[in-house]
Image 1 (tube, helix red, strand yellow):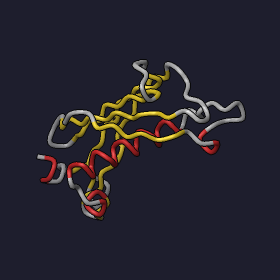
Image 2 (cartoon, one colour; image 1 turned 180 degrees about the vertical axis):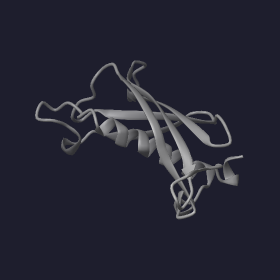
Image 3 (cartoon, helix red, strand yellow; image 1 turned 180 degrees about the horizontal axis):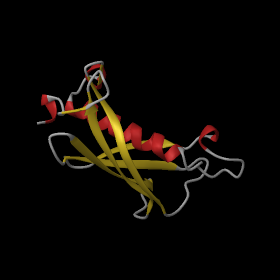
Image 4 (cartoon, one colour; image 1 turned 45 degrees about the vertical axis):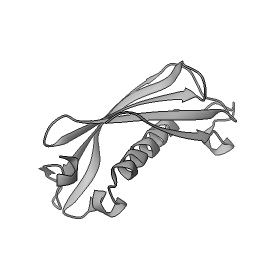
Length: 127
């Protein structure tokens, strides 16, 4: 799936005492981007949290290149690829609005688990 862009402002709650976005918050921004992609695909929120088939993070990789600051407007670009019957890969980049340089880039692997926590095939709507 081609990239989907989510835009928002950085608020005080996102930053440390120096007005720089706290590194762990970028994972939240990645999550927001993935949620937007699911909405775009028409995947109901209830479908990704069913007790018999939950979508969970398997692995996250992030590269921090430049910081975002209090008051910045940033864009999270998210694309998704189904890499197997069991795994989705989300590729993401965070930039200041209107600027070409990537602040943070990352990949997140998502898998499906059953009610017992065992790996299971992705739901049919991802095929």
